[in-house]
Length: 125
Image (cartoon, rainbow, N blue to C red; front, side, top):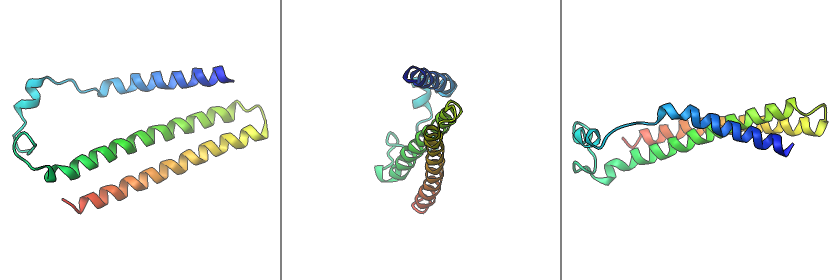
């Protein structure tokens, strides 16, 4: 069973890495500084850190919610695999159901928190 879990975890990590590959941005240093001051004030162009703080907080929080969502989806998949491989053992079935239930609850809480944070940060703009 430990070997199967290790294989499944390794497979999910590999698939996630391959799925994330197209989203890697490829830019050159010339492109970064070319449009640095065109309509978007940054620290390079003289904008204060106070102006950037809500954007920085929003980006960090959105990244955290994205990671939480990925973890919740992976846990739902793991719970489904555990459920299908339980062989009728009631304790394993209950454990798998709890895994899926808690992952769904976590996903719902993350979505609500995402909405609340974006709503609150909208008041600061």
